[in-house]
Structures are given as structure tokens and as C-alpha cells.
Image (cartoon, rainbow, N blue to C red; front, side, top):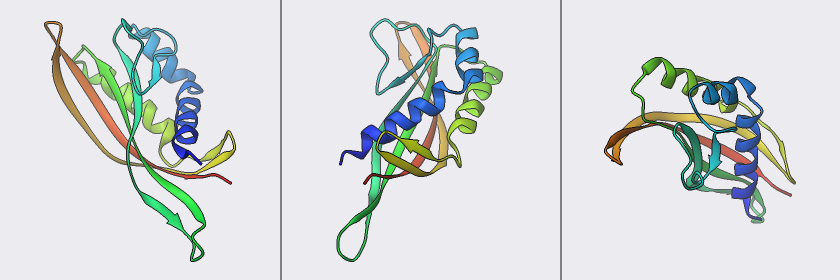
Length: 145
């Protein structure tokens, strides 16, 4: 089973179902829904949210080697050209509300738990401007039959 697809589908569902988040992103200039897996399409205007699997902590297995769940580490980034703390905090708070301590069924799997592990930010130059990446990292426990 490829659990990344289940984790990605669940994150997309959680973020796009939060209409306050998608409305806020649109108010700040994003194309609807403004949320993308791995990377945004070429020429997508800023701001937007992108999420990707960046690691894991190993599968949990039973004594007879049956996989119980997969520990997945996901990075969710709000990418914006603005250095406006109120806007950044609003988007990151909405992402946190959508994911942290949540669970649910997706495709043929289950997200047993989602926990925010850490936050950070970074700046990178692009096209003669500074781009801010506000980042939150989450652990998902994903189970498939």
C-alpha cells in the first residue's frame, strides 16, 4: 500500500474543506483553492499553500510483521511575498485548526491522528523579491487495510 496518497488526499480534503482558509487565501490574492500537493502549477500567483511528504518515522508493525500504521512527516508551507505578520498568522492558524489533533477516513484508509510537531519560517530570493515560507510540520498516522 502506498500510504502517501492517502495522507495527501486527507490533507487536501481537510484544507480545502476549511472555507475560511480558502476564502482568506483568495482575499490575499490566491487563485482558488490556493492549496497544492508538492508544488503549485507554473505561473501560479502568490500567495498559496503547498504541502509535501518529507519523511517518516518508520512503520509500526505487529509481531507477525503486519503493518499497523505508517508514520508520515508532512510539511505545509504558506508561500507569500508579503511580510505581514497578521496575514501570515491568520493563514497558519487556519492550517493548524484544519489539521492538528484531527483524524478521519480517506479513500480506503484512515488517518488515526495528526499532530503538529514544529513551525518555522525562511526567506528566499526569487525574481528580485523576497519570498516568505511560513512552515508547519505535522505527523500523520495513516492506516490502510
